[in-house]
Image 1 (cartoon, rainbow, N blue to C red):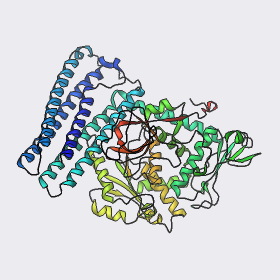
Image 2: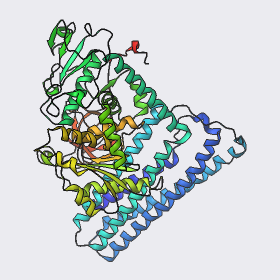
Image 3: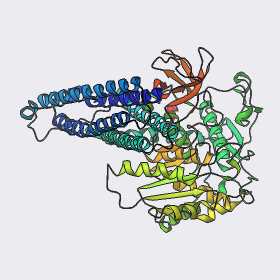
Length: 600
């Protein structure tokens, strides 16, 4: 029992540390703007935020006081060490309140002289792009707040489960949890506002469009050689023995290798299990000048020195690829890496989204059907996409998740959104291969406007999955899911990951617009996903592993409880470690820059 209360104390101290860091750190891309009108606005805004956080802190202090009363009343046996923990935690709260008051006075004092200095109503907003370090630090704090929340939520749930019959204690834990989630939403809203200060959001929109134009020009150039009979080609067969999402990811892998080798990509699609007519039944040809796989010399995949002079190379499925080229995901083009790292929270997903955008260009008939369906469904923002994958995934690849589990995170998203803007109606787009999910959701959640097409769910059944009707249905689901403002799904599903990839083409950075009930994002057949240790970790519980600053960790997954699982490549140990103690390593590869395409 003492250990669990000590966990509460530790969690709250960590939570307070986050608040102190955010409220006392001026973290803007240009210190030279300190004497601009926007700086004064920022200072006043910070004061208001400090006041709000002070009120929320008082609620936490009240919770601690109530727990102390419960302990003294003997609701549950509490020994002397527990009381000492509560006393120390209370002292920490008082110390933080003192620092908060000092920070508020300092902010007021520093802002006063600027009233006279910044009296120019024509002051220009700072439109300079942020530094990479600024963006990485902002994302690190954003991720740290989430991981702290996952940890706190998990620990308090364990305490509740350990006291099933003690209503007063479990009730107080619920109050602490509610106060904590309000704190989390407050900080997340402040961080969201931070991304839109000083013209940064306008810069992101412009930078995203410029980078997308660069990539699309390169792909257009590669796929349309002047003389197809002389062009070097890479050929892939669409008919991999799996479902639609898996097959499209197979094509993306092939396309990615073709780009790296500077070879025109050719799709073999006749006799496609979804549509015997082939790729062009639903999508436009991926080339206007070269769809012929003929050539003067052919080779299966092999060592680079044996295939480099062959005109046509046939690429196997990723499971059989050997040797592996450096262009495999999770690598991004090294010439674009600095800009992508600054712009996006998960650059590889942005890159794969651009490849998807080029490949999946619908034929006019399909495009018209998609537009008509959008009108018919009254599809409009704000809306959350929920994909519930059942049937063949349950058991072999994924666990069963009830609709209630999904809706918990839908509710959390809308409560956060309502802090930023009015929400007249909560909407969700529900996609599932189980036709029983829609009526269940409508019966349980009548307060939501649930948009769905149950005929798509029926066509996704195992007995009719590989048909044109089923193909049309899954295309529609991915299309609408990708156009939602937020995704709640399971990344073990290829459809979910495809929707997430396509979503990146509709926002400057949609890397955090999701909640996965199981896996972290991955690309099938990817190279190792590595992280770098930022903070030392000494194991305190069975199953944890030792971390030293600079260690490389091969991550296997996030448990969404403050801990991830992976292997320390220095020690060879596999186990759990605090998720906040590592950072992502962005892999790059020397993709061709295609200067002839006029892109830079």
